[in-house]
Image (cartoon, rainbow, N blue to C red):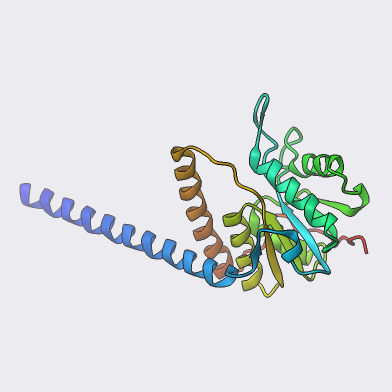
Length: 221
């Protein structure tokens, strides 16, 4: 009885070690792929971005709670407005989640950008950008963008640029500003981003089709 239980524990231990090694390998592969694809393609200033493309602004919640603005949102909108003012892009696609009527990231991004001086007719809403992969694919396939400048915080922008690179979509990134955060917040963000990069590998390897596609839309000239 004890011998059988001991074998069971050893089996569980070996399986656990094997899964942990696979997780480490997956994270390492995702990091390497992101670094190789995005290195030198993400910029801190709009003036360093290529001209003639379309800005893709990745969405997030405008508020973290009542009276608590989300600095990630604010930083992205400021960077996107700077990109527009620099004359590098002909329009901006604001891509985010609108799966619920009460939660509409593209609408909030559009409002914020208009308040920052971006003409409303130069802002196109993508209401089906449920994740970064979907936003990049839809910008190219649905909206017909042939060259992208992705706007988000550095690690997120790098992941989006990597996705575009492996899908043969010319893209570079504009890094939105970061706000100093607590150690626990940085740890949560680090873990979340590592998981997102592993999910990126899965999407790229399987060639996953975004959840929502639909008819093509025409961007402003």
